[in-house]
Amino acid sequence: MPWRNGGGETLQIAAGPAGADLATFAWRVSVAIVARSGPFSSFPGVVRTLALIDGAGVRLAGATSRRVLTARDPAVTFDGSEVVDCELVEGVVRIFNVMVRGVAPAAVAMARGAPFDLPPVAVRVGFVAQGEVGVQMPGDAAPLVLASGDAFLDERAARPLRVTPRGSACMLVALIDAPARPAAA
Image (cartoon, rainbow, N blue to C red; front, side, top):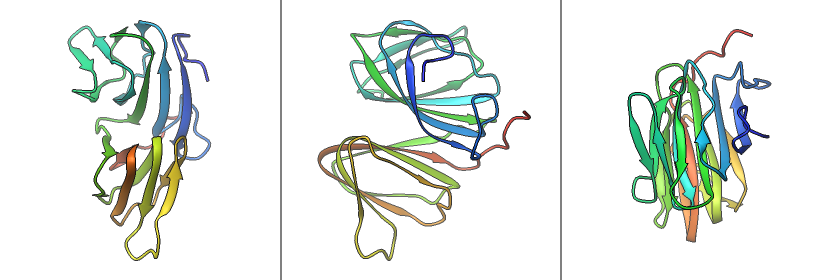
């Protein structure tokens, strides 16, 4: 879908509650392709967390702060109501975008290399950016293997989840601890 301000496009992975749109989501996870510099859309009442998937990065400039999103500093969080201008560092980037209505930001885990366990939270949304990743709940006989472009949604994330990247695979997972109530329609 195109951005509300026309400056890029987004692939929505998941949003809650079911059936929520841009005005009523409690949380939303997407992947954005940013092909040119320009302003981000404003989302009042929303906390945004961005993680760089690929590309050189972006510089984000708001009225009260400046942030840089690069491979060295791959995640940033900011108030969605802040007017933020995005400047590409060097060409097109792909960004994992997590938006949560309220004041508590989501955490973003990036799995590269060694296996690790994701903690229990209210909601986990994962996206495989590259390669293959095994995802396994404690007690499961074998992992579910996800490939590049695959995603998962775990809304009953009461148990740890083992993530095992294969080779140079990369998976990003939004850890949404306490989803806010959806906005009034």
